[in-house]
Length: 428
Image 1 (tube, rainbow, N blue to C red):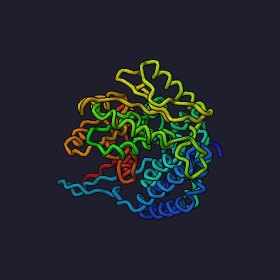
Image 2: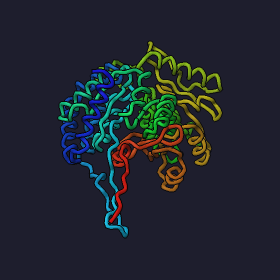
Image 3: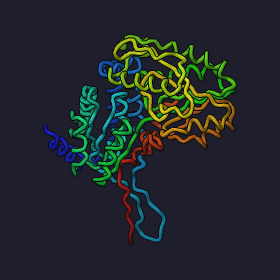
């Protein structure tokens, strides 16, 4: 089937799908959740083979997708018409699905990123076409099959095996009414520009350089364990990974050795072994890019705490560097097993360092003091603030960024309203 035929099939499916009651759509989501849960091992293997994620983390990704599908399958229908009190006989707000929505998704979480966007969009009454990363066409095709196996109508979710150059063409097609992209700033800017020119809704979930702030009254052991995991899970290839460890100056000598010890537990292993904590990066060219960034940071005054040591075309012994304000590396996202340590003398300086970057995705702060927690909750410029835990996404809670980390909301009930038209109905 050619591209135009696939888009036409999506539009045709949408025309009937939008009339299916919300509760009936939810029943199909329960079936999808069940299929994900029951096949988590075999689906996890697809992820590991495509992008090197340790198998235990791949299986956990599938199980999280199942959990998310169950959440939406049991969610309150916030898209029912709302009656508003006015002097008119009829005053209502209706939520109307937009139509066919394009998803442009990355390789780092090949099932989670896709389903995180597609499930609420489809539950809201839309149809979805997917442009997956070129190394993840296997995941994309398997997700399409899962939707069909769960009983969703043909054409409601389709994987398009297309390259970057065809994304513009698909987005310009009058059938497509919106786009959700998870990826780099550059890709996001291009897609949003095309959507804007064609007056179409866009949602962008872009990069991050999240702060992991450790203050002097933190639980050092928990913060160190959580910090190593926050930076090195999925080989550091996550937009909301802890990337800059801002440590209060008076605890540097005590906390840093504990953190380094936890960090050094991550030794590259075979991705299909269940006890492997970290494997190689998704592609050798991504490892090349990280190595370039490492050299750039050092050239601009960064100090080595643990060297970033390349042991194969796509594997590293994880690195840790000490970086000061003004280093140009702070303007970039480090997508791989390289962490940055920064030192702040007090809460105000820690906040300034945390906010002084182009990104604003999700920050983490470690302190037992409620007043200090509140100071950071109110003043950190990010879509999420995690207190005494590493950043992670949760189906029940909104996920999205500010500044160069993008706009729009994924997850939670709020995501159901991302790709709908708000229609006012008023009269006597």
